[in-house]
Length: 89
Image 1 (cartoon, rainbow, N blue to C red):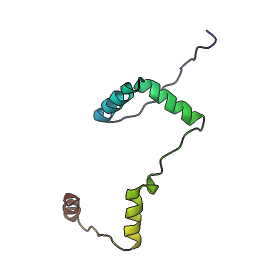
Image 2: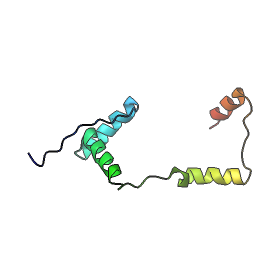
Image 3: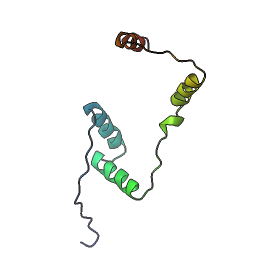
Image 4: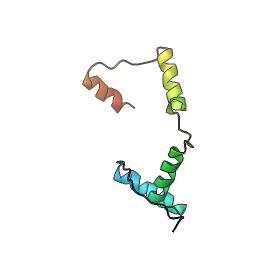
């Protein structure tokens, strides 16, 4: 029993039911449960062995940055304006 790991803490998060179900299906294809994956991920974070995704370097973010820097933006005034703008996306 010397190699038995004691788990005495719980971490939780909230995600949509759809995201959880998709994660469970995709992990099952790789032969791992959601709980196993989460324990692995938390362990990697504890060991500072993670590489975070920098969303600011994504193509979408870089494009948005360039649009702002070149003045290629649209100002939204009222909530109706915002609704109309979002409908055009």
